Image (cartoon, rainbow, N blue to C red):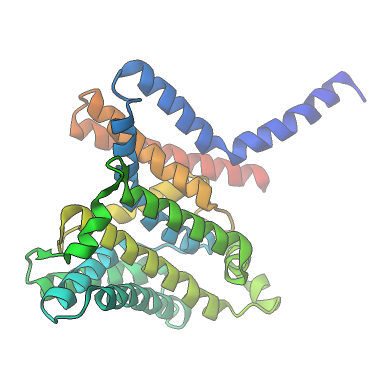
Length: 322
């Protein structure tokens, strides 16, 4: 074997590892850069603040990962999060349900929204973009109708989700980690998870191999709705009230986190850990830009460029494998 061939063989695993963990490398580089630019960045208080900022987006993104792995898209998660939170607050304060039962109803609303999305996609044959865009409007509208456009106070027991344990560990961060573990287990250790990858890789081949594609899409979008409901409850607990306009635009951050984390918009590829890293990148970037007193307008420009680069990398990676 020639020296050139040996060098290529040695480089191949490194290149594969970098392609698989590029988001993690980018996160480390970003943390190092910001720690050099701002003395406050690595303080414990600020790092915990980054975790809190990432929590809602990450939970939404974990749910969106399921859909994107199948080759779909879910634009409704932000609105479903708001509707679920409004449902919990309204049923607990106006309908008089105990908060545990109100929480179950809230989660059921999220699942129901996901099932409607799935039915439109799987049986109505609507493109996922159109089906979930419609649900985005419907869920947001229902949140406004139920709340009459005004915030509703959350039950005190639920509001404690926005507190900290031991005075320093934010509960939203714990919820984010738990939901991330749940997402990883579903994707890697369960039949629905394996079916998601098969459908995203080649839907027709998945169908011919015996996978009930339509049924699995119901499971996939229902999970996305359930994760959106949890994210909505966490967000409302931080605000101590459910607000009908909450989580507006969060669906874009969630999708961006999934793509930045290495998932492919064409389906068949995506990891819960990658999504978690993608959400952290967005939170760290925003936090660092705030510490550096960068204008909020320019922050939007920077975030947009990062998202565009992530999609470009995904496109180039797919071309290289074809």
